[in-house]
Amino acid sequence: MEYSPLPFFQRGPSLVTRLILFSLAALVLLFADARFRYMEDIRGVVGAILYPLQELAEVPASIASRVGQYFVLQSTLQRDNAQLSQEAFVNATLLQKQEALLVENENLRELLKLRPRFEPSAQVAEILYRARDPFVRKIVVDKGATDGVTEGAPVIDASGLVGQVHRVYPWASEVALISDREQAIPVQVVRNGLRAVIFGLGYDGALEVRFMPVNADIEKGDLLVTSGIDGAYPSGLPVAFVDSIERNAAYAFARITCRPASGVGSHRQVMMLANADSYPERPVAAERVTRKSAIGEQGKAD
Image 1: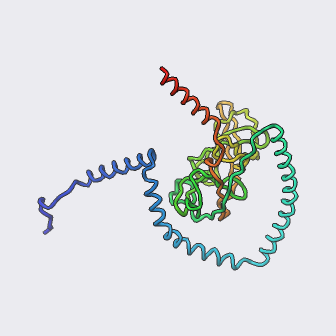
Image 2: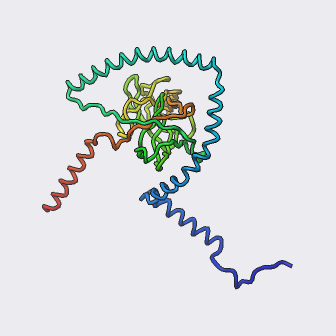
Image 3: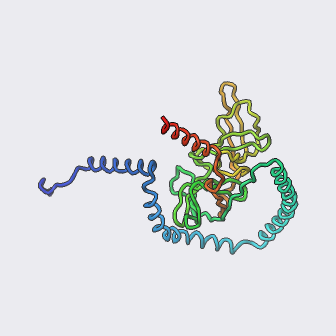
């Protein structure tokens, strides 16, 4: 004989009602976090609490990496040393030429009364792991708010632009890679100065230049660098190389796919630059303030 509780002891809302209530609460929290950022402090506290556990989880991988590095063959080290010595010799020559060009450029800017270029500060960070969400392209690094990192800071490596700081915790930061779907970067073709916008496609090693006319002067192999007109990225950072171009007269825009210039999948260290908050103020913002004040004074006069 099956036993079932009396209806007198069945209390509380039904399962469907609970599902609806919790779903509404989740939607309200998502909207409040996206619109008013009410959850930033709570997220920071949770990140601070979970940081020791993250470091503990990273210990096995760190030990395995160190053991693998210890058993590297001597011949490999000698070959790498010879290659690095040759590259250092070539780079030293290029550096001397670049220093002369920089001095000449500064003299020309001074003669033309142009504003000096802003050089952002930088600090080195180490990649801890990738984000757990398989539908985003993000990494977590070991520098956070305590190290002066702020949201929007550009992140680079030795080859080019890696991404942008998306979220900051006390001792760690989340970086959105340039291949993430939400990333759009103003770029410029080095060969002819043509400006464009490059978008991430949501999977590794894939970028796309959109809204480029079919007859645009862009070729396979062209290097795309940041244009700097958005104020988020410094100008001149390598972003991608043009991989393929499909031109069809039936469409207004060409289909241009690119590969990233950076090697985020090959390195453990990245460099975090100062974000746009450290850049000089935009003239457009000053004009808007002037217009608003003028409109306010006119309203008071009326």
